[in-house]
Structures are given as structure tokens and as C-alpha cells.
Image (cartoon, rainbow, N blue to C red; front, side):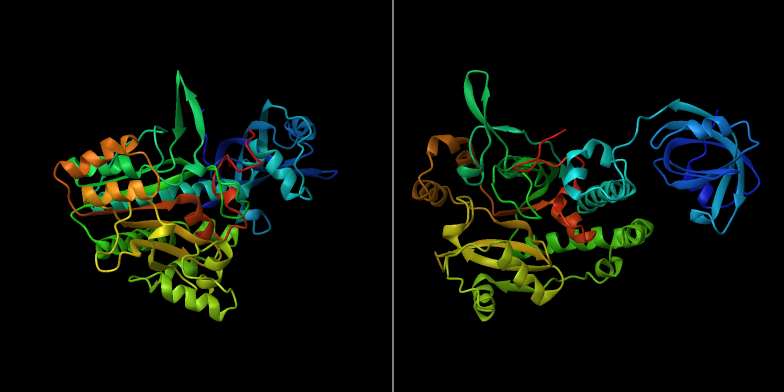
Length: 427
């Protein structure tokens, strides 16, 4: 039997034709002479009225919310129906009769998070996951156009890329290992062969932060490029975000409309993005009564306040070296400043961090010692500077933070199917 996707029916052109659809009961409204079933599949939702004299009446009375079924009927145009079309039911067959479904419209956000495995069936999550899929596709598309090679980094690592306090440790046979915080160091290995590489892969951070933008497991868009400088880096990042936004405008209009997200915000994204220094950021914050001192790391509230000034993506660059990682290249004419940049967006704050990587062996070793890190833990990384070192740059961007900003989501946990936070790890 050939089944027609619901979206194809809603697109028109099948009026008065007999078709078969399959899916799940989304809503049900009963009357004395008619039962109105709203049926959903992965593509959309359509109304299917069942008349009392229909052979399907008995099954329509019995069927419950979220039951799965197949249905045969005739397509009718009806302006009163959601989507403007309906399938007048002639025959239906129940595949899986559902128990009383626990989710109702008045359930709390907390409850919906407790039953995530069921909430993923909701129309909202269906649309968000589709946009997420396309954002990943647009990202791959961008890097392919830029002639980057996609690579596959390991998830198990032996030493920290970022701060050791945010590492998840585990027993790996008879030794201790960690879950990766970033693919960066491994991507750096591969630029010596492929020059321009990227990945979209999970990263893990044992941060105890509880904000709308924090996950302990998230998907990381990361790229590294040989023979490149900071101008190349910011251009690459802003062109990536602009490309993703433009493609979303072209292909995701219906999803944004149904979700109530502001697509015009993405349509207005243009390069180059505004840029301010860390020193300028401190001055702006102090003007807003934050009393932030030079050398302080910028937190969520500070970043949100700065983003309000711009109303669109922008960069902060030239951070103090003491708040940046060991691999950050230091300005040769100002040893207090790291060649590092963050991209920020309204409401979310930082969505990416990038910079120039230290390409001088002696300076890298000195920085490791300065931070109290063991040189032997990074001997393979130091080898990259021993054998044909080159200037190079790279960045990491949080996929879920990007999506949260794009879709105006209330919380980052709705940008990923199965969120992992300090309190949530089920299912």
C-alpha cells in the first residue's frame, strides 16, 4: 500500500482523490454525528472527519490520543479545517492503541522535561528538530564550499583542552581518561595534512552552571585552518553564521512561522560583524554599573548586557591571557593579551570562542609550565611545533546555542533531543 505524506495533501493538488495516510492521533473531538480526528505524521497534521454511518465509526470511538493507525479516505478542500484540507474517512485500521496519554495542554514545563521521551512527539519539538537538522546541513554545505575536509575526532581523551575542573573523568580499562571538551587539539594535528578541517561532534563540560544556555553534553561545530590569521578566522566565523541564517530564511519559513520565531532577524544578518576589544567591553559594562575589572572573565549577565547594545551577532577580541587557555597565541607586542575572540548574540551571549594557536614551541612549553600543566601530557601536541609548525587559527561554536538564538527558544534544552544538564540525564 502506498501512503501519502500529510504535507503533500496540505500542499494541494489531491482534491477529491482517494488516498491512504498513516500516523498518530494528535487530537480528537467527538460529536453525536461526527468524530473529528487530527492525525499527524512526520510532515504535518490533517483533519480526518468520521461520520456515524462510516464503517470506521467503531474504531474512531475507541481510538485514543497517540494511537497509531492507517486511514483511507477522500481529500476535500475545507477552509474551516486546519491547513485548508481534510481527509473524509472511509476506512481506518488501528495499529497500536495507546493508553491514556499523560501530556495535556496544561502540563508544566518541568513535567514535560520529565517525560522528554514523549514530549519529543510534540509539534514544537518536531519543528525544532527539523530546523536543527537543516542548520547542520547548512554548516556542512558552508564548509564544503570553503573546501574544508570533515574529520572525526575521538571522544575519549588523555588530557584537558580547556580547564581541568570541567573534565568528566572515567575508568578506561586500567587507567583514567576523560570525555572530550573540544576536538581542537586533534583538529590541529590534521591541519598538517589537510590544511583546513572541521567537525560537528559532541563535547562534554562538567560545568555546574544552571542557565538557559548551558548543557553538559552539546554538539560542537569546530574548525581549524593552517596558514591563517585572526582576520581569516573572524571572516570564516561570520560567513558561516551568515550562510546558515540566509539558508534558513530560504528554506525554513513555515517552521519559523509556526514556532513564532523572528525570521526577519536572520534575514538582516550581514557581514562584516561589529567588533570591540575586551577593554572596550569592560568600559561598556562599567557604564552599565557592572563594576567589572580588567582581568575578570565575562559571565552570562555581562555578555547579555553587551549584546543588548548591538542587537545582532558581534565579536569581542583581545582578551587578557590569564582567562584564556594555554594554547592561545599571545600578542608579541603586548604579552598581556591573547589573540582570542568570542562571537556573541542577543539574549544568549557567547556562542563561539576562537583564536590564533601558539605556533612557537618554546612559547608553548613556557605557557604550559606557567599554568602548572605537565609537559609530558602534551608531548604529542608539542611535536606539532617541532616538525613544520605554521601559523594557524580555529574556533568552536555551540550548535545548540546557535539554534536557541535563531529560534528564540526559552531554553537551550529545547535545541537538542536529549538534554544533559547538571540535573537532567533521563532518558
